[in-house]
Image 1 (cartoon, one colour):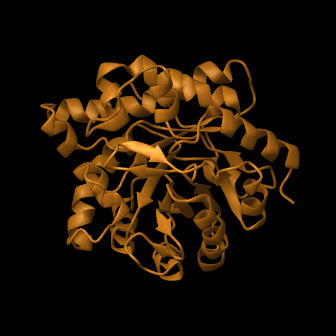
Image 2 (spheres, rainbow, N blue to C red):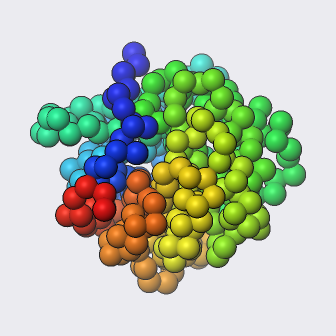
Length: 314
């Protein structure tokens, strides 16, 4: 059974009300209670194994003040599930289940706060996330736009049929893949945001941000554009560029600022994500603000309090 989307997500992005607060990294509350997410499917494994844990993780963010839950489908692909012995029909069911689990968490959280819409964003990671080899931080897969569109479209069709409020096209490293995604979401009947992973003033694949954001400027389906899974300082620079180039509302949800060391399989460095950065993002055009890797419910709670304290958009 699919759940009905909450009316008006795209309209909320252009309203004079305060920006919408996104959740943070789904792995944070999941790992905090002992779930091992080191496998190739990452949090998508729990769609099959522990769906109750996914609902609990979404609830942790809603209760912290988030208005948008991002589903556990970032690394959920037909190809990735097939490597685990999960066939096409079962994989499609798990993709749809990701949306339903987000909706269930919204129902539970919304019962405590009637009249306050809560939204579900169906996450779709880049081609590199399916490879599970770090390619989403490099791009340049050697595939063309048409090949990447053929990869993305079947999964996006399933996610759209599950009726989320928005599709989250996340951690896109490459303008070539962005072009494919713009084509892949046409006609699905669900709005989408597209967010690049960036380093400095360029995509992870090295394209200047002005060039990368221009790819989505004319897309009616893409209702917001921005950055995620990057350093907070890189997000600071990118928000204004995204707003200027596209004229669209901006989405921004960087990492904590720590860096993953693949050799030691541990995080290093110090967090640089602070709620204080949010005011600058909003003034530059951000209408969706939150966090990605290593940003947990406590930090999202701080963001929510700051955003709500700002009142209507100023």
